[in-house]
Length: 140
Image 1 (cartoon, rainbow, N blue to C red):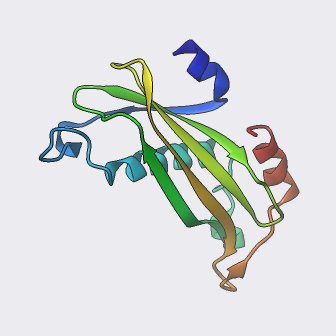
Image 2: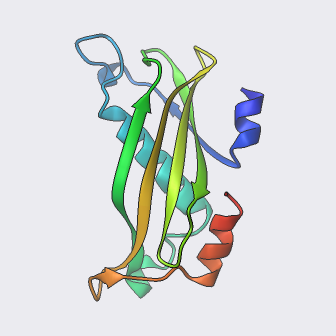
């Protein structure tokens, strides 16, 4: 687990809930996207990405997301979702998620999402600010 934490400068702890399991007694595949969302918002808050959205009208939207399931998760468990950034361009970046099971001491799921900056006032793509660009580069 220490190696996992060392590889991810930002990570989010999440408890697996009983109600997240399906009829096959493992966490339902759709729930992983909720885990990714929780980690994504935690990451955004830690780099202050959402702090100006009300005044500027500019914020992140997902254009694509993906998950690859390596091992099933079950209740009870606690997971850590690590986040890394890649493919930064003028208006978008890719977030990579790695789900680590504390009970199994193993990576169970990997995923990614393309995030595009969007101006909700003009309904058009927006450029990354220099501050956001610098924050994202710290987590490549």
